Image: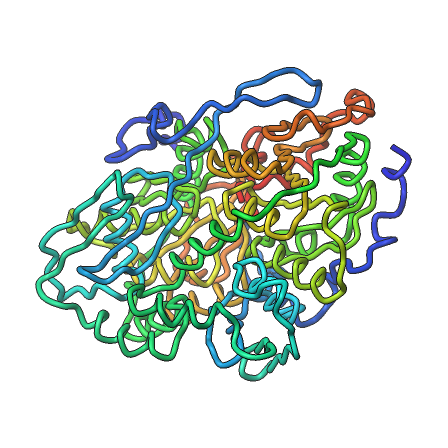
Length: 296
Length: 296
């Protein structure tokens, strides 16, 4: 457990920036005793994502890393295949738009044109595409050390973040072994995952040797996104949904939830969990971290 | 504070049904000590909502009250105006669809036909419609008693629920004075709100004298939905987003967040909060309820 004593803010390739002026705002209010108070709240902005000339979706986001969010969203939705050549990603802060330009029209645009004739909203379509996209997915069967799980949870919980600064935000962290690499936050937990996917795509980062940690629940959509990214392990402080577990078992994703102090539950891939740490040495969570429990 | 000692499960018109076999599933797993364990996890099902012949959206839901969910979603999105006559709501469990049939084609369907030519996904469109829909909204300026807030929070936290049974789920409660009336839960907090909106629509329940309590964050979408429903007060255990606060102030919605034990923060409508309870008599939350803190 040597990592648990290391400075949590070191070693990240991308860490949260709780001090960034654009991401939070001080808002005047009154507390339970009637005293005026100023609290820091997270921003929430619309960002409309285009694939070439095609408007795809308007996401609500805190607004950092819009290019990664757009790239990751399109990839995780199966709208941007591995074969597509991305010519550029243009973010316009004023228009609150980001345009992903590819080499010619993607197959998705054609598909969408067909589907929008019969579907009023692409949400259903998009979800269908995601399930389709999963059919090809096979994840590498890698071992997960409980010593790494405990070390990561401890480091991530102590990392300065927008959550600790302002709350009401989700975090997702791309990890390798016992090291957290990229820690993204957003008002929607899916955005945080998509920003990590966009970063991996831009940097050409391998997925098979990584672990994804999320503060959010292990829903079908989180499991599908993680599998689409090719990451074989998904861990969370939060709980599960039945369909999330089902899909994880189908694609061979190791799924670990309810991680609080020494406690966790593994509902998929237990045979790949290597128990090299003594839970008693980790102990239970203190109240401060218990507060970080999340419904989503 | 007399309510705080009353049995939490009494008096609801609709209360959660944690024992309902269709809503949760026992899943086999292994815990941190390597022991086999069975935990109860919530179900998550796709439900495709149609407005007449028009497919609108596929929502992920636990699957209770599909008719209320469909009606409430369409109303809260501004797709089903107050003037529309609903002829019927048909749920097909096998097809996982629910069709809302109206007297003739709604204006929304025409609108959608136009917009889908230029918009690949109605999500952006839908969000635009919601903001449009708000322009006409003026909420009654009603008083909020802190004694009611404390009584409601205490009752709701002690009400048997899927959250207490299985976790990983959101709750929203329609309240009047110091009494919780309808307590809906769902994997997405928006679904829980929409189910309440659908119930109100079906039962012809007035909104001006109600309060909405949610376990989720006070995001722009939650604030907009509450305002669309005509409910003047929105309270939550969770935190705020800046845009949520902004919209609440625009439409005159009283917004109270971070409700934990005696603590809360009011960021909109403070002048309508009547402080008739002594916070010290309420005290701080115990660890069990502190665990219910939510990021979303």
